[in-house]
Image (cartoon, rainbow, N blue to C red):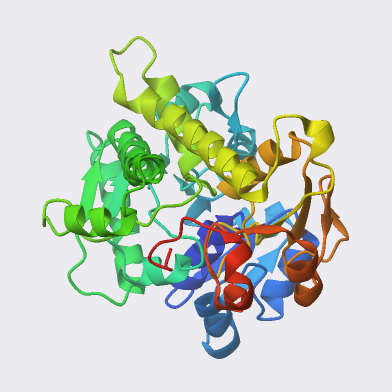
Length: 404
């Protein structure tokens, strides 16, 4: 079976690797460097397991820039292109998804299209009418950054949304789910086949729940900081209730990354006309947390309310990335904090070894760790690292448990 994966970010590449264990897989992208990396058995993204699979496994995987070469003869085309949130239109930018659908329709209208990109609730049905294509399904992904292949090999569940009132579409959905299950290393994986709109809702509600959990423990931590209470002890005590659980409860500067910021805002937009308080509060809570963290850092650094008096203060940002083993900076919470600090006249410098440039946006990059430590009055770290232990007295973090 020939499967094409359009988009080689962490979602697309992990799927391409997973499925190429048992099928012919062609990955297509618009970035030549990514194509070269994959064809040379190297990973263009930071994921140790993907790197190992590409280097050591006998995968039936190749990459191309050519749509005709990719889509001709394909049984399935998986779309894993970016859908960034457009804050002006209050909706995901799905132009890349639609571009792929149009190309597939033109080159191979027999292929079944599986959208893996995150999309608004109701999008699949809308795009069928808009582009005149019926053979489209939606399958949400539930992957963690830096552990994308692992989560495909050990899926929490496999969900495929299709027109289940049509027997052929339902069969195709079941066949695609079986392909994902075949590539996994777990035998007892729960598979759900449902309508596309319900599958789209599962994705957004899942990520919004995770964002809610992050926001909850961050607000708990904010309360403890302001009331001079031991946040770590309280979180531990709360989390011992098995209905709550001792996981995903480590305070941070806020939620960020590829999915949670945009998915929560998209769900909030989908709630237009529907009574709600909680969903919009989750989005607002994340802004409030970053405001609070920035104020705490400024106080810790001895900054005043007058920006003209703060130019001699240097605050260092230790890592822009959201998580360990990730190279993703997108919407990382620490960036929101650093922008707020900089607006108060404080000089901000960045330590981020995955960056090769001398600056990030308008901020100086200092990737000599010893120099970085020495020039900073305060170092902020969303997640603590053992390399900072020698200067722990100048480190501001809310990483209480030293884990993601």
